[in-house]
Image (cartoon, rainbow, N blue to C red):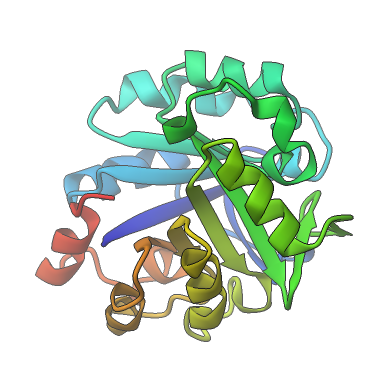
Length: 237
């Protein structure tokens, strides 16, 4: 299983939100480019990027566009504000390894024909509900119906966020990750990771292939100098 750093950007700055709430934002002075370089030096091979401006309905940020060419050793996946097929195709054409989005939840048929290995469905869960639009809107479809539609179209990759734990360092949402993995998805688990010890229980869940960490890495709860961190960052997922 791979440890996947998450970089959330708002107004061009690194930020972490508590429970996905823009009113509970912590900004960091570190620039995204410097942080990515530090992560790459520590062995990171996949990074999850989130355009929060796009997620909350503002214009998508152009700052991300240069990252795949500037850091060719990193496989980048990008989410936030990718609400139509044209936007997704544009990101893939820029050299991003994959896109992460809720269009797969809202209109899965719109993705028909896109490469399944480059689409990661953003399954953001509040209890039994999938939420979209910056976690502000409940999906009109039952979660199990969404799962069935995605799998039928050949999209088997999912980033599962337990919204109640995101940005809290309260530990990962094991139940949410296990639920989605059991349905047949390859899961990246997100939300609440507080230390290296949290990776072990996630690794025991069949189908969980990655763990997303934002705050814990940024604030040193998972230290980059630890050999176990470096091994986890370099893992294959």
